[in-house]
Length: 141
Image 1 (cartoon, one colour):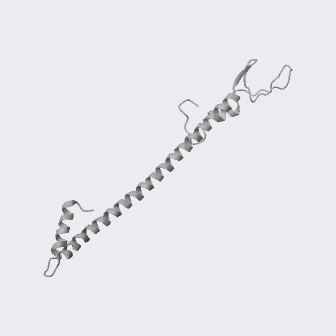
Image 2 (cartoon, one colour):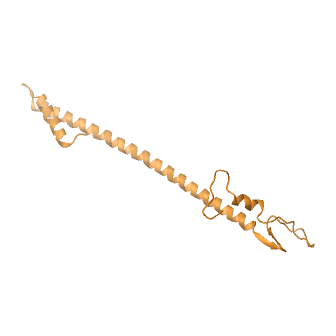
Image 3 (cartoon, helix red, strand yellow):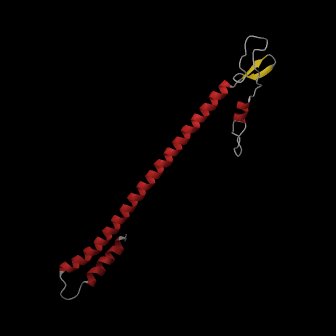
């Protein structure tokens, strides 16, 4: 779109180009209005582009925001699951041994009431050791 001086120059050029003998005032006005119509069309194209682009960016922003929210929910659910697993697989003292409470079920009332699984059990070790390619967390797990 043209600035005001360029637009003025275009109006002047349009009027001069149509200024020859026999030209009516109506012809000069029509020539000037043609310049105005071109400018309005350019402005409409710019507005349409900005509107379309703005809507596209808004949709992309909403999509990205939803993906971040979904990822946060999945992370919170995973962390809650780990807390639940750790609360089940906790260390308990049994005689002189530290065993896993969940992995060492009671077998009855005899002298050895537990099937003993030393702590940390395979479940806790799997939670504590990072998978291949992962880095350890800042909390030491």
